[in-house]
Image (tube, rainbow, N blue to C red; front, side, top):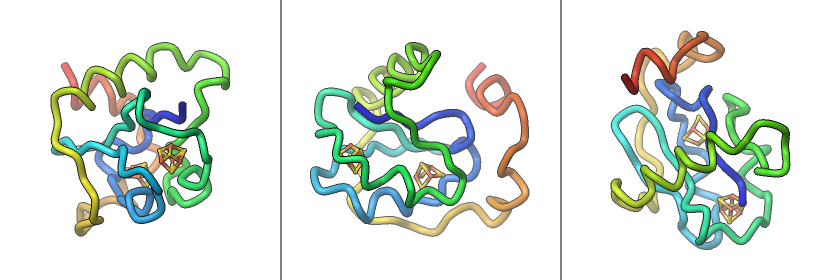
Length: 104
Ligand code: SF4
Ligand code: F3S
């Protein structure tokens, strides 16, 4: 599976949604996640993310992100069309500790 990682939080550009052939992105207030059981590993979303937040789970240290994506994809609604990203998305790109500041 591919997973959405920390730098999506508060950037939420949503370009990824437009290219996914199986509509397996789910939407929270500040970020999206991928349902690990629905992703077909096509990889087309990875280069589309302006925040470079999408990774294959074969990258090192992805276990926590697979869990994060699984947990929230089972709680949040599916998103099939990109909306408007946050106005300050560019400013939030690369800001450290976004997981801690938005999910604790
Ligand atoms: Fe969708 Fe393919 Fe990205 Fe998986 S890798 S989330 S199937 S676009
Ligand atoms: Fe997030 Fe990148 Fe998609 S910022 S919403 S993973 S395009």
